[in-house]
Image (cartoon, rainbow, N blue to C red):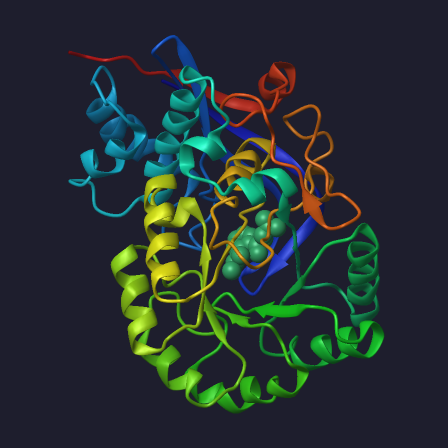
Length: 370
Ligand code: OSB
Ligand code: MG
């Protein structure tokens, strides 16, 4: 296993309710075995604002705990990796980075595209996945309208705008006034409290597809109460770390839609389980994004081919994030708002090693000790 610490500048800053970022600082995992290699990208950020994990905690957990548990061990299938890490509580982003590298390696050793190994639907593999965009908080409403215009022009199937108290009603109103009934949703990244329910109920008249994670990152109870006071469906992101919590959220009415990010739930296996559980309860899911490079993005595209990913995801073109991306050709969105599923073995994209080297700040190789 090789770990690299990479820093990549974003094409444009990205701002959420917890702040503005200008680059991504992340761990890239490469695993080798069975005559094949696989790569996984850790979505933990340099700060613990979206979740408790950071780039450095992921590095620590992988080197000290995950690598010694998995290296040199026989696994007949990548689905067996996550359960083998059960003694490690949490740290799903660290686990996911290794687990996803393992899936890529497995798919390559079987000479299959990852989507086939994950159980993607023939229809989505053929047509490509529906792509949406997540637009951060901007300096002004005019700037927001410009961003939305550019993305609609590119063909994206759904617009998501980040909101927080003070950047919500006017932002949504601006988009509706300029662009009419385009598929629109908002993401608060836990910026509100239950006593602000009236402000959120005021969004009902805009017929949003959903409001994502309005309340605390670790809450279900207040979301249940909020959903009883607003018509807009609640979608949960931060609150759902395990399939069991997601089940509880559905059963109690804390959400009507689920955002799946493999990093947040511990990798592809747990994402598939969450997807299947939601499908069996008639709850639609969509694929979230974490500003991934083309490597993590490719993993996300393959996972998005599972049949209950019925809503457009936050999986967009490379050029919105990195120029150049770490892969060539980069990921592009087509005029109809879809992204083609790479057809080669594994994640099916070509990594440009020079760009990896240029972005690397630290590197370590880990080997079996037994
Ligand atoms: O809440 O979905 C989120 C980015 C970083 C952290 C959290 C989130 C996001 C996004 C961006 O919304 C999605 C993307 O374009 O990758
Ligand atoms: Mg979100």
